[in-house]
Structures are given as C-alpha cells and as structure tokens.
Image (cartoon, rainbow, N blue to C red; front, side, top):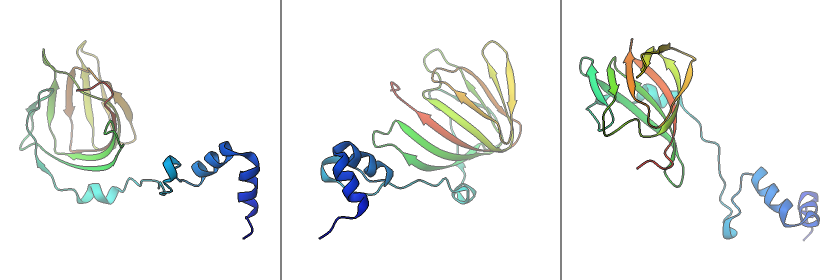
Length: 164
C-alpha cells in the first residue's frame, strides 16, 4: 500500500511533524487515541430556548432587588478538569451585592453582553454601565454591586484555577 504525499512528508519530518499534523487535523495524539476534537459552537438559539428558573442568594452574592429574580443558563463547554467553562446566560432584571466578609466572586470571568445593560460598581464607588457589544472581566475576589438596568443576556467564560 502506497503512502499519500502528506503521510510521506510526515514520516520524513519525524515525530514532531506527526504531532503537528495531528493538531492541524484536530486529532488527539494521546496513547494511540485518534478521537477527533471538534470546534464547539456557541448557539444563541440554545440561550433563547433556555428556561428561566428562580435565583436565590449564594455565599458570594446576595440578591438585593428584582421582582421574582430568575436566570436561564446554557453550559456550552467545560474543560476536562472543570476549571474552564463557557456558558450563555439570561437574567430577569435584578441587582446583586457581591460583598461579604467571608466570600467574594469565586472565579475569573470574562463577560460579553448580548442584550440589556448592567451597571457594575466597585467598592471604591467607581462604576460603569455595560451594554450590547461590551466586554469586561470580573476577576476572582471582586467585591461590589451588579445592578441590571434591564433584563440581560451574556456570554461568559470563566476560569477557576485555585478556586475552592
């Protein structure tokens, strides 16, 4: 059986090239595992179909305003170790306080606003309003307030290294 030109080049270049070709082809190279790793779509239709459920206080946040506060979340990706998560979320209009002597925001989280507006205020009193197309990072340990000016939809990417 004759090798294809691509296979022949890979054999001539050695193991490093095989590894590179595997990455380019989206294949895992672990212990003979040849499973295909695919791109993960962030499908907005999943968020639009997500059912809103009631929210309640958590150790790091207290709901301070909002009539029947609720949220719908889709988890679109989670790394094998569970530390890197991509999700979409929709929230009714609500306000949160992320301040406590024992707890603070538990992860580093990048957020991209799809719809709605939120005003975030730091403990020093500085604040900014974010709306559609805006992006920001809420770092682990953040303390302050999250005041939505309307219902909100966002894409969030969180990383929890070192978080308990």
